[in-house]
Image (tube, rainbow, N blue to C red):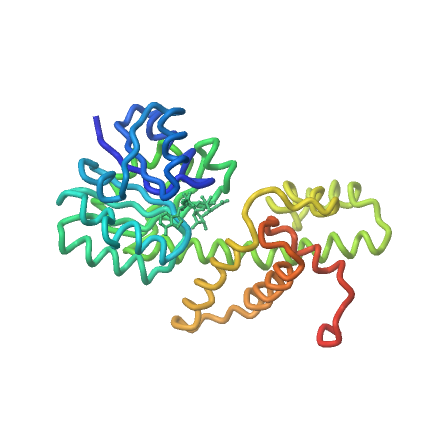
Length: 295
Ligand SMILES: NC(=O)c1ccc[n+]([C@@H]2O[C@H](COP(=O)([O-])OP(=O)(O)OC[C@H]3O[C@@H](n4cnc5c(N)ncnc54)[C@H](OP(=O)(O)O)[C@@H]3O)[C@@H](O)[C@H]2O)c1
């Protein structure tokens, strides 16, 4: 039986680790706040370790899903980090949405120790994690990918090797760029329709059957119109992702005119108190009186 470790039992990591245990893998978890690790071990019957290093000690594959670059650095490269515990021949898979730079840094350090590394950010949100239906974008060496994929399949509906290390994170950046502009367009469409006094149910019923259709339209139009923003990926997380993306664009020369603008709009949503609102809350900002510089 393969031995696996999972570091970071947040909204995403907790159910993902649960799928590993349900698949019959010998699973040990680590979480900074121990109470969550204890709750997980009680629910799934696995074990929990005191440090990432301890969790990684006997593991064939160590999975990680924490917040940002600094958190990844801490749990993998820090004192008592996973890289000090894992044996040569093991694999570390990072599901955090982080920079391509940190992925390359860990890959190089892991390689020196004979350990494989994959950057493997996910898409599909909390619901995808809870249903075991995540989409996983992977960067790394093909032979390492082939060994890890059957295990990642435990909580994913699609797992794709995009290219060398860092490519998973870069693909996730493409995903976030596409979402940012689309949600702003949807917010403006909904806001315009309401201001025009249209029956938005009728409008969506017809336009969602045409070229304007999107996942966001199908799943978020109603809650956006109702001003309900408690449906998943938070504005703070989105700004973290867009920050990473804009930094990457500064180095690869890509123009992200719209993404930069939408990032500023999300900062305005934060100023309205929307840090934990979901990303569709861009519509809330449109309810505010326009400022002179917007005219
Ligand atoms: N939520 C989504 O819909 C979604 C979708 C796609 C991708 N993601 C990405 O997935 C990652 C995790 O998201 P999430 O929603 O699961 O976040 P979350 O609920 O805030 O959980 C974060 C986890 O990371 C741990 N952590 C953070 N910093 C740490 C550190 N320095 N050392 C040790 N542990 C640390 C936290 O431990 P504690 O319990 O002690 O705080 C917690 O277990 C993020 O990169 C996010 O962008 C999220």
